[in-house]
Length: 300
Image (cartoon, rainbow, N blue to C red; front, side, top):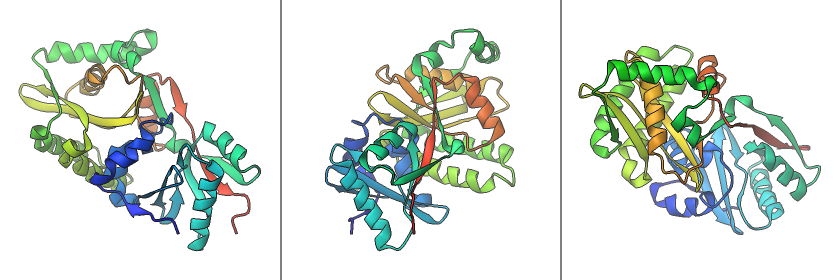
């Protein structure tokens, strides 16, 4: 049996010793996400044979992440396949990026079947594009920012600190009460829990974030954490929708304040929500990172 254990704040260094050095850019590998969503997915990890192995519950079924490391991938895959067999459950990897499918075939030819899961595909942008907003296709974003500046010339951008936690949580409550629908209530309630966990542990998580203030009142906030040494994950972005252009402004300001070493910004999935998909596409992603579910051809 693989010695899986629950993820805690104390595991940050060992998990990031694998993820930060890896080329993968999917948002699940942000430690802030791994920790703050573990209440929902019961995410566990283990280190075996130079690989980071992770498993979690999805739709009440135990599934695995693609192993991360530099050892023998076939051995790592066989280990998690055997782990699933020991519990008499079907084996599945959830969220394998497109180019990982080739690695799987090379390691264990003709063993797996693949199905794309579009709702969980990540939107990845060049940081520089979100900073400059150059070009005709991003004109509407520049217009929103100009209207914000026209109406709020005295705005202030602040780096997110624990002193601002209470105001961020209050703004999230305001946003939730304005936007929640019956269909989205469960998802948004879970997001609220994850946000609160992250905000209340921002120092331990080394979160990087920012907040917009208009007339001394918080109007928007955002935060994230690195996926690897060149890709930054934006975990949360919330704004008071009564302040025109607040979303465009916090997006642009935060992109300016993210260290330049991060070439790419991952703004996560759209979850098949039409408005969210439209908004993410409107920022002209550099790539849409497709993810696949992977199962054994014979999973009996």
